[in-house]
Length: 79
Length: 397
Image 1 (cartoon, each protein chain N blue to C red):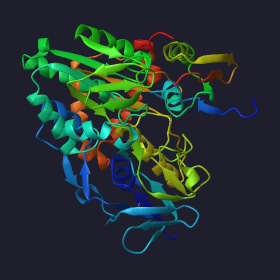
Image 2 (cartoon, each protein chain N blue to C red; image 1 turned 30 degrees about the vertical axis):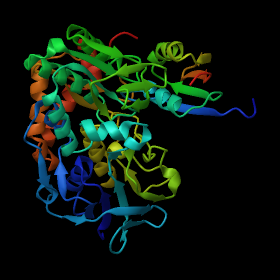
Image 3 (tube, rainbow over the protein chains, first blue to last red; image 1 turned 90 degrees about the horizontal axis):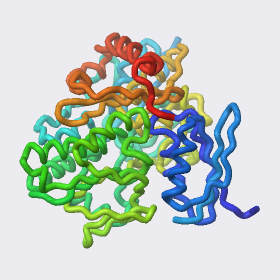
C-alpha cells in the first residue's frame, strides 16, 4: 500500500455544483489503482458516490462520518 | 496617509466592479486588460439559440468611474513574491495590492476530436463568432439528433448547458421540426442538474419536452468521422448536430510561485476572503479563481464587492452565494440559489423569473458602476437561501 497513489479531494463546504464536480474531476485525472479520498459535508454525496461507483464499476472501500465531515474512500479499478 | 497602488488584472465584470467600487481616496486604481472591449458573455446564449443581433459589447473605458486608470496591455507574468506584473510590452507594473480577475478561456485541446467539431459547429461559451456559428448551424438544420452537453466537470455558468438544450428544443418546435428532431443531453453529473433542488424543478420539463438525458457522461473523445462522442464511463452517443460546452481553463499567464495554481490553471484562494493562498496582498476573483462555487457573473460581482470591503479595511466574507439565472425555454425560467453552507433551493419556474433574468441583462452596464447596488442589496437579502428554504425546500436528501 506504500506506493498507492492516494489523493485527498476536499469538497467540504462547497456551493453548487458541489462535491460531485470534484469527484468527477478527480476521476477524469485518475488511473487504475489510484485511491480517491473524498471529503464532503453535503450528505447527498453518499448516494451520488454510490450511484457513480455502480455506473463506472469502481469500488467504494469505506464511508465514514463524523461531526466535521463525510469521508468516502474510492479505489479506481476501471477507467 | 499616502494612497496605495491597487492593480487589477482583467476587466470583466469582477475586475470592473471592483475598480469602480473601491474607495479612490485610499487607492490609485489601475485596471489592466489586453482588450478594451467589455463583452456581456451571457448574451452568447441568445446569439446562439435565438439569433440575437445585439452582441452586447461596450468600450471598457465608458464603463469606468473617475479615478480608474485603464491600461490596454497583455499580462504575461505575475510575480507575487516581487509584487510585479509583467506585460508582453513595456515596463512591469508594481503594486501594493493586487487582484487577479482574469477569467477563463476555452481549452479545446484537452479532448481528442473536439477541435474539429468546435471549429465546425461552434459553441456558446467562447466568443461572439462561435455563438453565431451555433445559430447558423441551427438555422440550416433540417432534422436528426441534436446533442448538447458539457465536456468537462467544471463549467462556466452551470445552468448554461441545459439552457442551450431547452432553447434549441423550443426553436425546433417553432420551426416545425420538432418531430424530425431527437434531443440528447449529456452530463458528467448523476442527474441533469447537479444540485438536487433545481434538478427536481427541471427534470419534469425535460421529460415533458422529450429530451433524453445521459448522466455520468464524461467525454473521453469525439470521433468526427463516425459522428460519435464517447465517455470515459463507456457510453457513446451519435450526433447530427453537436453543441458542446468546451472545457474552461485559467489564462496562460506565468506565476511566481507557480504553486498558486491548480492543473486547470485556476488560482487557489481562501474561499471566504479570496486571498491567494500564502499571500496577504493579493486576491483572485471570478471564473479564474478556484473558489468552490459556480463560475458565474453573480459570483464575480459578489466576490469583487467582498474584496473591495476587505481592501478598505472593513469586515467582509464571501459566503459562496449563487444566484444563476436559468432560462428554461418558452418564456419561463428559474434561479439557482444556494451558498457554501446552504443547499440549492427548489426554486420554481415562472415567467417572472425569466423577466428578472432579462432585466438583469438590461441593467448590467449601469450595475457595473454600482448604480443598482441598493436594489441588489435588497434582492440578495430577500432571496437568502435560508429564507427561501422555508417556502420552497431543497429537494430530497
